[in-house]
Length: 478
Image (cartoon, rainbow, N blue to C red; front, side, top):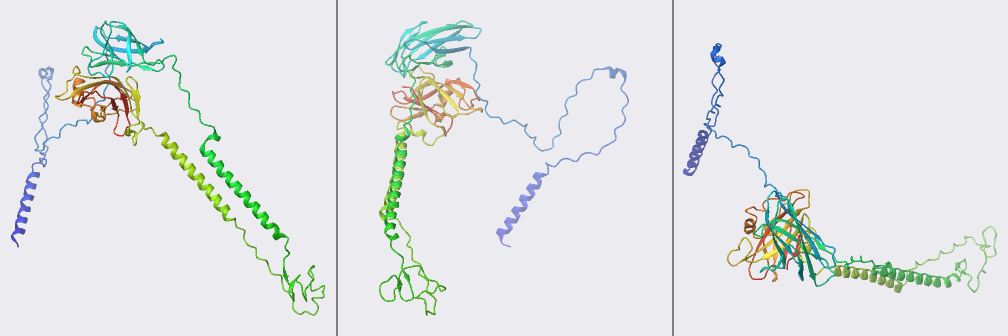
């Protein structure tokens, strides 16, 4: 036997022996035989009256097999339940000729609360009237102006604030959201928004469809039908004219001596045929019967070439015209300003301004405020600048939904984009990872998102989405 084979056999024997030795401790020990227990005598009365003490649990006998760990239910992260803050805010548009808003801040708690109220001003507007000691401020790095109040809300009270704005165009709608924060002005308690619509702003009249007779497909179809009808009429007229001369020519017949009606000797005058029983002069003395008349050949009528070519050209022109019109309408309907992210995603991308609720497939996003600068908490690492966005997320579905920080983007004026800084966002939310916990069905979550940008220019637009294949929404923050 070769040496290599002997080595293999020896190694196999050793492995089998080790396996048998490892399995021996796992075998259950033999149970001892049952022995009849002696009958116990009744305890004395003194012992019977003594209180019974609890007996300690018996210690399990070791069997050599490690005990299985206790079953732990595998549950995912709990959904984000919106906390009910003691402070809430409501914003309403005033029925004034100029844009005006009424802000109501309510403290439902049993103790006074120090708060900061911020109202974002739309681009191209300025505050003309501010009540309650508010000030119009424009922090360094802020994309828009704002009005701020520092209020001490008494317990179970409501404070009402008023603002009036001046805008460049009175015929446009103006949206101005407001949020109530803590003393640091970063972590929101509640946010609300309202849109002022001027009296001169009239709803856009719905576009009326063009009359049927002015639609290009109808015109092309009518032209093709007219060409077919005219071609058919010409062809029918041509057949009638060609068949008219042929109707006046008598048919030729062949008799025993030659064709009937032909001039010359033996010609038979035209007339009704004479049968064998009548005995005509030409049939006397003939032994063979009269030959039958030949059947004239009828040629199949075919339409002229010019008619066939004309009808084919008309049909081809109608098909080409309809295809060209359809392609032109599709090209004209393309939105050249739409971002390429709306091509193959689920749903259609929606764009709006600050304070406008925007819906996509699963979430409704509302961006209330966007601020960049050194005063933003938390601070950015060296070389970066933090930009904090106050975002409201509402789950529109009947199931809990998760979202991801890498899908939330801030677009810079240069065209580059940065994703949400998850570490900084966790710090801004007091250590809570908002992306690791799903949003409960039908609930609304208000939270700050942090984007770390490079350079001095603030973001121009935010892109928020619920899933990888969702078209998402875009919010103009400049």
